[in-house]
Image (tube, rainbow over all chains, first blue to last red; front, top):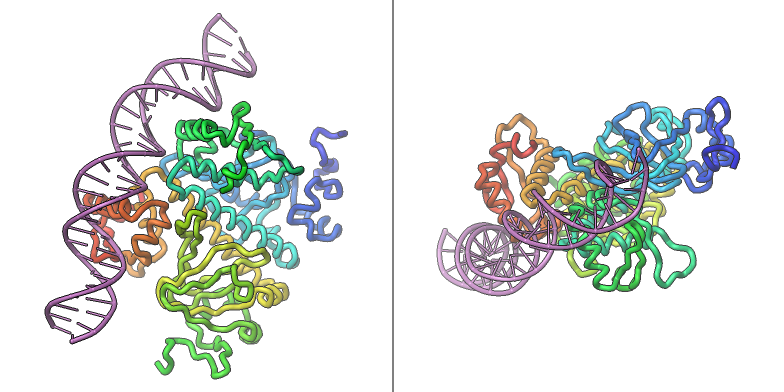
Length: 238
Length: 238
DNA sequence: CGGCGCGTTGACTGTAGTCAAATAAAGTGG
DNA sequence: CCACTTTATTTGACTACAGTCAACGCGCCG
């Protein structure tokens, strides 16, 4: 790798180089022609967030939407009493931002170092109006996000914490789609206990006990704090 | 009123009459010109659901999207263990349906008698591709729905049931937007206890007790099973 | 070595779930 | 309009589970 940021070589003027973008064929802009991408890249710029750094999803008027190039982000909001609540995790090629609307107070925080391709909201909306395929792409992803949010509602609506954690692990399992049929797949938790508790609507103590319970049941085995081996995938999904 | 269905007079052939549609200027189709509406009405038809009747949101390939004309619907899904889980309520002029996707198992059930304007998914998608304003309208509403779903996540993520119910009442209060500044506004619950429990992720017994607790606190007063007078709006929202 | 961040464990309390029964509301037919 | 049936909601007693506060273990870095 020649640059410090693998897979991305912005030219000296800071223009986006789409040609060698690692998510060029899976992000929303994949539906655009090279010329259209060039036009879009004219209004966007790159930004790198260090782990823990926050991007204001909508609170900031200038930077309202973005594609995640690498790393991962958590979407969260602060309750009125100061408690953090997680809504989901964004992975590379994911799109984030609230178009056509007054701003929300949802923030995006980098879980790892994260590279983003960000666009001013107004400019992006203008481009959108002329490119139906791009708008359809965004619509489709927004509907996916809605689906995902409802899956979360379903998850945290469960009464027992053991079921919530089981359900979360089941979702993670599907999400990771480990290539190659592993009998006992591994899950990498991208969240620490505090974030996972904020996602599932519980406390770190209860979470810890439920991990213990699932392990005692022979369903999982822990390897360090964030690696989980699934001993009985059938029981997890069932 | 001449017909049995107030505000709607489909012609003898079953074609939609958009001219006197009660939600014609607030539904997604409001952005279309009269001619465009005519074209759209050619692919849609009306349907009336009796209270309790279900419309398969996506399980049915032929009927995949719709605008609600009157009445109200609940969106729900059945957990693998047979428990119903609510995701939200649709009101007149609301749009429902999952475009551009494999089907989900979310169903829509009429809470009251409900009139819908339904469209075959494929046909609707074709129209969408040619009408950017309509697509933008749908995108905007989908983002609203996502916002709403996240508000629900925030709600049911709260640990205490009293807070959940308080939060729900607060949302209902904003939602109803009673015209005229009432000091002690009324809320009409559109859901029975079972549905409300399914929405908030609890049981009808606990719900009942929390209603009692809020009443004992002097926050609300109940009038029958579904009417709530808000005695202290400030405490509810705070 | 000692402090610090993160996760686990323990003891205790409070709150929500469960099963069962009573009461209130709504619908039905005379 | 009233008596009766059916359904919806409330209340009670009990149990189990999750939250809270506090202490401990562990790996990491200065």
